[in-house]
Length: 80
Image (tube, rainbow, N blue to C red; front, side, top):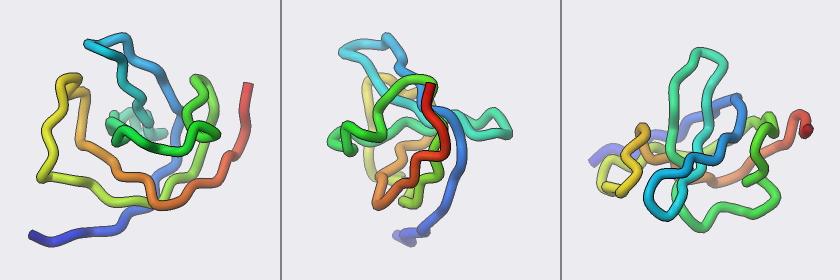
């Protein structure tokens, strides 16, 4: 399995699916599901952030709203 590090910029959204899920919606409109356990300072709905991480193809989730993104680091660009 190849692990590829990526950097994405987008808006954090809360999704009310199952027990709830957090997503990063990129400027291109692509949804990534943020892997559970991410920093609470990142998980604020409406906040824009630049995230460095990796897409985990070995993990399935109940929300299944997009590829699972494991956050390694982030930078808040703006918050509401």
